[in-house]
Image 1 (cartoon, rainbow, N blue to C red):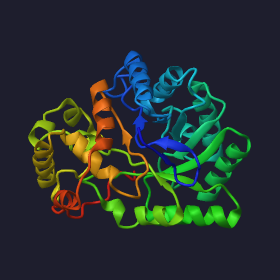
Image 2: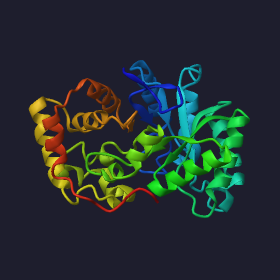
Image 3: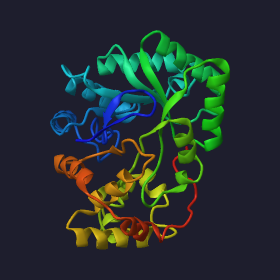
Length: 324
């Protein structure tokens, strides 16, 4: 396993972050697996040297956090655990979502309880809250840091001007700064390269991209992917413009180059992301232990400049996706 310093936090994290959305309660998402799988996946990740784990309170309505916390029992101190808040947790309680002080404080306590931890290493806002001034959100999160409940705070999927506003507010008001950005970035969705990623690089934010394999689109041929259970049942995956504006041709080039190198499409797609200097640790999900093991092997793959150019060449701009 390779390790890197996560942005300006000083924390050393594995170059791969295990995303924990794939385990919890199948009633929440049809493709989600249960507690036993979650424990096996976390144990194998630790065996492979992964020390960075990302979850969210809304994944299986808290079950993912609970399973992760149980799976890390006895190993929480050497792990770097990230979770998130924003989406409403209870349909009948409007204050169980958003980024007001009330929502942050009560949902943070609930996450700590489910994880079985006293302090969360990285607490992230899952999306931008248009109904709450960012200063209020940052003050609540700063207080959480000062009370020892959170070590660092992070952002996720937002417009570059919103991230810039957040950083300016933190500096002007002496509040905690977002130390990381968890954004949507992969070989068939590269809109973040225009503004957000250069801003993260300039401001020293760690970058932990979500959906590095485009929710499975970059792991198998286009036609085969469209017939998978996830493609058929995951409305969110269908909303992303992965097959548009060069995406299908990129999928074909990934197939071709992966075959030439004797590796899987998923490994090639992940290797492309790991070659990007502004990326600290992509968040990888896995529905099988083998998927995790294959991802770790991607760390050893070298791509030439011509390989990277060949993969990127068909890409054309697509609508912004993932901010909502």
